[in-house]
Length: 315
Image (tube, rainbow, N blue to C red; front, side, top):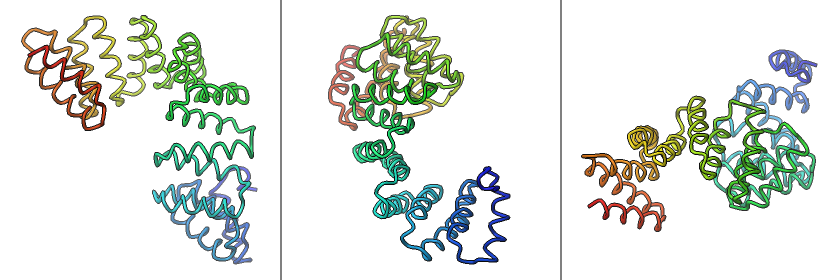
């Protein structure tokens, strides 16, 4: 009863007593392992699930649960192996496909994540989170029409899905559908006004629409919520540059660089801003040199060439 109510401390107490009576009860071991997992007692959870798998190596739920525990223990490769074993035992387990998709996305395997989310959705087409997460993967792969479609379905299934509205905003922005992007970001913020990403994304839309005052307000709100995002400071610096507030732009770019020394866009922007301030030619060239190197190291040839061209203009 405690387990079903989410009272995991109480559940562990009762389940421990039950194991003293029946040492090899698979269901009891599973539930206590899950209870430990929910309390972030990962090592104790692992002990129970290891024991359960030794007793019943064909228990797919045990393999899947141990995958979750291994993620808690930062053993991502072990988790991947466990999820795969669970799916070999039960290829119709939508939740494990979903879990493996999330792990693959974390490991940067977006193609694999897309395949697993698709399989999860095929098995359970009512899972709004799976659609919302597949939308995120499609964004990463620049499949913007597919991203819009996935987020739209997530919203149909769950009209208060903030992630889906925010992701659809980004997808529509990349499709140059600015009005729908603006509506989606605004709705995401109505649902959850603490989402700094939604403010930042709406700022991008407003800047593209020429509403630099609105963009500045949105980036500033995003920074109030999260002052540790280098790219939000870069975006606000860009708007201040647009408004010819070059000192303000330098301040924002500098804060962005302090948070991420390899932020080539912030170095590039600060270099251009310094170039417009009296007596700052040397700083401008230094920043553009650093930006050019970062762009080249990351294979961004066009950005590298532009940084070099801007540097030569200043010289």
